[in-house]
Length: 418
Image (spheres, rainbow, N blue to C red):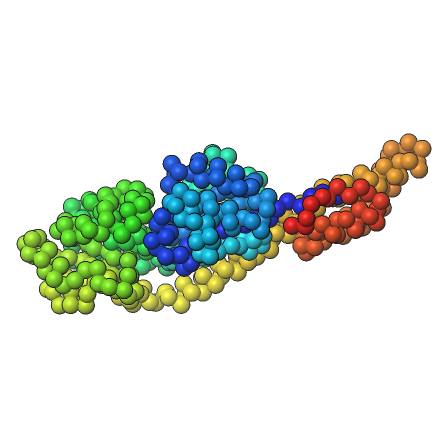
């Protein structure tokens, strides 16, 4: 009987499991991807795809030693930045088999995002897929999983309105900016932090005609990544004071528990700007903008709650659409795993039928046609049982060995059960 293929695994860190400072160090740029894939392959990754965004760094892969995979990933991600694997290991999440498939599907559908339904993540997954495929990292299991992920993401976008949530929030923000400034041509924007909704709003403002956009973040690599996608300038937060002099619209997404922008800073900038007004959108909880800024005549401050109030009529619908999307993902996971498990049984079924046909041929005086008909009849029921066992996830090494013993077949399933 055949040897089981190691399962799909997803191992990584995201905005919920890992401090920003550590996650920033782990970010893998496109130019660093060949070395990263080489390190993963050297650690036993038969297939690997690295998804590295502002909010997550994770490896989707198939490892020769599934139990040792977290240590391999921790070593590969940590080694370039001198972060010991044993330090990084506790910060990693790991999903395996069906849970890994569900995670990949949910990421592609933006159900794992900080802002559920945000549209950028699917493009990020596709870009990572293309790069890792070109570098020889993605193999048949990853290819099949991502094809299914793209299909369910398309279905979710087509059959639900989950994407309308973040888009409507971004549209509301742009509408408020236009209420203040009118046409955005000639206006400049500043994005402080790289939260998903902030990036989406920046994209909408750029599409509405904003001339110049600057991205600042405490972590330079993250600012550079967001700026590249937005075709914007970028820098560190130490440049905030001078950046305020240039910006008409300021969007903040840091939420560090202290005020990034104070009334004193805005008052000083207003004097340098000859009282040219600010639109400030504070998307952070806790807020980045000091409440005293609200009292300045030329500073118009909105927060996430204000945007939600503007779009509240559709809030219940958006929650319902997310629940509908979750059900679609669950159904797609069941279908994918059942189909794949059925195919996993195909080599076992073929081996069984060939073995039975050989035995029957020895008793039918070389009548090949008769042997095939009898063998097909005799092997039908056990073939159905094999397929059902695979679909139920019970076609493991011990089951394969039992079937081989019952039918007098050689046991070629070496190694430990996976």
